Amino acid sequence: MEKQQHDTILVLDFGAQYSQLIARRIREQQVYSQIVPYTISAEEVAKIAPKGLVFSGGPASVRKEGSPRPDASLFELGIPILGICYGLQVLSVMNGGTVERPKQKEYGFAHLGINKKESVLLKDLSPNSQVWMSHGDSVHTLPAHFECTGSTENCTYAVVEYPDKQWYGVQFHPEVVHSVEGGRLLANFVVDICKAVPDWSMGSFVETQVAEIRRIVGDKQVLCGLSGGVDSSVAAALIHKAIGDQLVCVFVNNGLLRKGEADLVLSVFRDNFNIRLQYADARQQFLTALKGVTEPEQKRKIIGKVFIDVFEQEARAAGEIDFLAQGTLYPDVIESISPSGGPSVTIKSHHNVGGLPEDLRFTLLEPLRELFKDEVRLLGKELGLPDEVVFRHPFPGPGLGVRCIGEVTEQRLDTLRDVDAIFIEEIRNAGLYGDIWQALACLLPVKSVGVQGDERTYEEVCSLRAVTSEDAMTADWFRFPPEVLQRASARICNEVPGVNRVLYDITSKPPGTIEWE
Ligand code: XMP
Image (cartoon, rainbow, N blue to C red; front, side):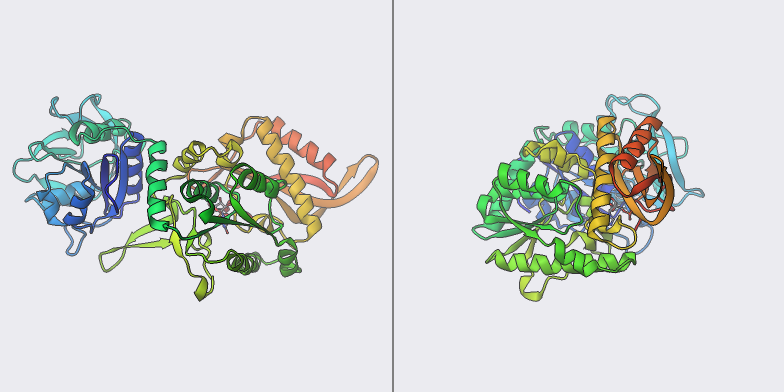
């Protein structure tokens, strides 16, 4: 990692579920922040020359042997440090304090009493500010020179500091939204204590990434699978800005796309951005492979396999390629602390074009690895992508293949595409698209009796689903105003031949998943 042009705060990751949020909250203060494994050496840190270090929380207990410890030489660098939760405990024990496990773990809201008005870290925080606690251990005795500047009812050492060294620690989590003034506290640390200049923006991210991509890629060629989704679209636009025609995009039409999707991708990327785009119309190949298949996992496997076959062919046609670009985001990178003590990184398999043959194993280029979805959207806007691409709902790789329940045929796909298009259009017309995480329609493998005009019908049934969610791990069904569902249902039955019944799915996740298959 190179020294950044902008002031940087490094977040040392001790494996907490919230550690990625810390970096993101700091970026919200217009200061660049990046996560690094807690094992980073002091020399490496000195090379990067950050303005400050944050030690994140983590699931381990400092009282246990072998629990993660940062390089002790970090304390010699003269760089301000903020320890959060486990990070505070590490900071304490490595400097002579002790940590114990009180009888009760503390989890949930607390109110922070400020013991010292002059504390720079707590500047402008309200008395009794609400904070969020989640810990088993807490500091029992403070190291020499440290003072306690904030406490809650159950935690004496909720805020501790050693201002001469610029070392600070908080037991609560300022990065989560439940800590109402957590952003203020982080800003105090980053701007007032670390003296980082808040001049970073998505525009600066583009600048540094463009330079970095040029440096990594040199005069080599990059291949990028474009799905039309936000992540791959933003990755392609960013890489294209950096290296222009050294980027080749491959767009596979698997026939399982939404109505108008292929045209949109072609017009945005080929016509507007002028990106070298190989369009593979593989609709027939997918349909043939899916013929007669109804079992969901088998469908997914077949779709994945045909995708690899088509992608491989396109990759070979693209000529001499060294890098494969992917729109992997931070939440896709599951960071965990391996038993050996070093952090390991695994990438969710469906985000990876895994399964490519040996001679087509490229070096991965993942310029969005540090970002969250909403940051990627900001970046997409910065790069000039249309809102229709930047703000679209997630769409699964196997597409309508897993929404066409039962056999996938061309006719059923066309029916589903029409149903889906009406549903999405009605959501947009009602101004609700942005309030919904994801909306989808499924075609069910059942028929039902109806009456249309004077005639008895016996036709297909579709279900509509719309959910709210933060991260797709859990989801709740969206409460539509009834007239929106009524309009969608009426239009679907009137306008889509072969469908005479519409259901709305009111299952949350869990127990349901977002997709039906
Ligand atoms: P589930 O159905 O598991 O979905 O609740 C969670 C989120 O993941 C999306 N999804 C996929 N995305 N390839 C993808 O790229 C897939 O195979 C896949 N399966 C599910 C789903 O749409 C939802 O946003």
